[in-house]
Image (cartoon, rainbow, N blue to C red; front, top):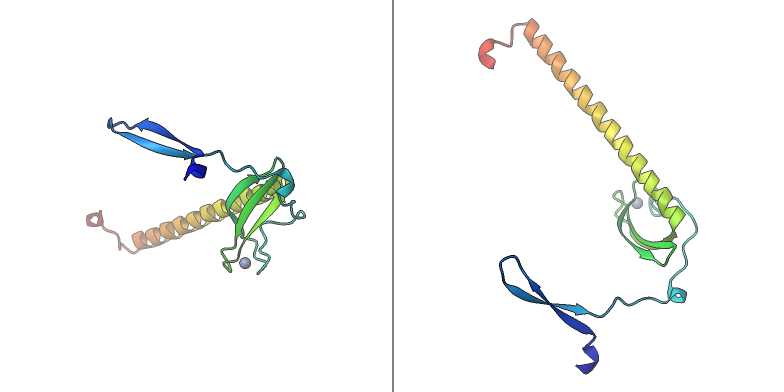
Amino acid sequence: MEEETRHRVKKVVLPSGKTIEVVLFSERLEIEPAARPPAEPAQDLNVCVSCSSAMVFPADWAESGPENWSVVLCCPNCGHERTGVFAQHNVERFDEQLEEGADVLARDYRRLLRSNLAEEIDRFVAALHVDAVLPEDF
Ligand SMILES: [Zn+2]
């Protein structure tokens, strides 16, 4: 038990007045720089290595040394998941691709919304023309 004393107890007073004790364990284990895996070669992180779908998204990420990131990549198409270490510039490019993807989705959504509204208006106008819409409908 003595070896496991690398923690400290912090008293926290909650808004209710209740005091709880939070056990803080010793500092995060710092991995030696030499032990950190090197970054994989630059690649299109949005492309799935298993099915080639370009819809891969980051499920989790953490710094891996001063220049690299450890990223969990998930493919919604085939469910493939992998973790890799990638250089800052590679991750920045991935981030840009994700933003571009979000822009495309937003554009498609607005287009769909407009098209649905236009169809609805057309149907409403057609209904007005044949007197299918009456004051008591409102
Ligand atoms: Zn895939």
